Image (cartoon, rainbow, N blue to C red; front, top):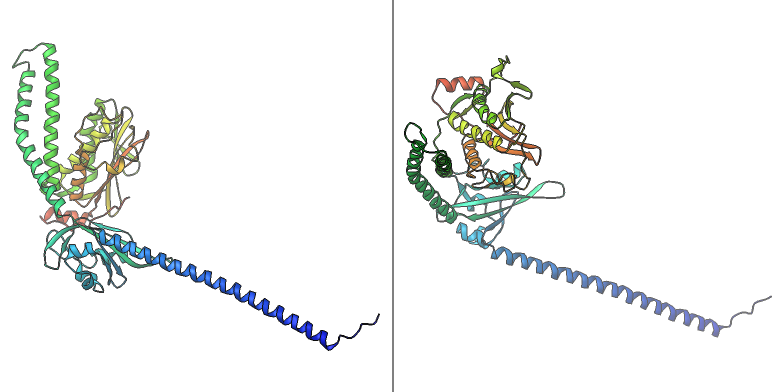
Length: 445
């Protein structure tokens, strides 16, 4: 079948229709693209407004905080400085910005010694890479006034793990320190004054219980014995209060000397085992990781020399307190006194098979007056100051004390002390000089 040729008029109509369709198609595409652009622009504007609002909120929050907040970059240049920081340091915000951090936040210790570069938290943070706490620093303000502060410096890390900035938060604790000092003075004075009458009462009760001095019936003796025990407990409370007050303000007496810890602890374990035997508990002394020493059995073990520099009477106070606590809270089983060491640290520990300590109580054990409140411990007497005093004593010798425990599996109280070698120990024995003890922080074996 043969197709008929299209005339000129028809061709023009077809071309006109195609042209119109093309124009319509272009218009539709343009409207779609415009609408898309308009939506993207609206979203962008919305995002910018949101960011602007968040920045304003952050600015308002930082301005309202009484604590000082400062942001520094890698060159330790101040990039952000809130009103709280301005109030504490005496530096106006606009003047502090872009200055080097140590020109604005000048830190000294309790002896008015300027922090060395390695100890300055805002420079140290870029080396250690972990949050730094300092509760003993004094800030020198712009007017050269020293203000005690509590300082926390935290690193800001990018996706590659590199520290690109740091944030410091600090607050004025002058009022808190003054209140603490007043409390400590009151406790110290009250404890000292009350010890004398309590000692007199205890003495008279002891005389009343002495068969050679007085004659009393069994019922009266029972009352007097309870009164005597309560008086002894009260006297111990006053003594602990006085000791804790001295420990807090640095008046705790200490006469350090060279101690060979393995022999010292072995001898002390013989004195302490009677406390365990009273409760029917087995006690042992462990040297190293597994050597159980029993002096009464004549064990012959070559003991390494573990030297530390500390006050033997203060260490005895710590060890006796920990051992007695272990006996109190262990209904059956054994209490172990042990020692081990590496080249830098001497570690001794008291381990028991008692009820254990709940995980939520462990962080608070070494605080003043804190006692675990459970049915297993509520009936056991105590002042709540023993572990606090132990911590303060161990810190005198740059040591560290902590506890590891599980409910139902017993507890282990561990103490690390800096170790000195035999040559240094001999030198200290022959010379009345103090060694340079490097603080160990939280180092553990």
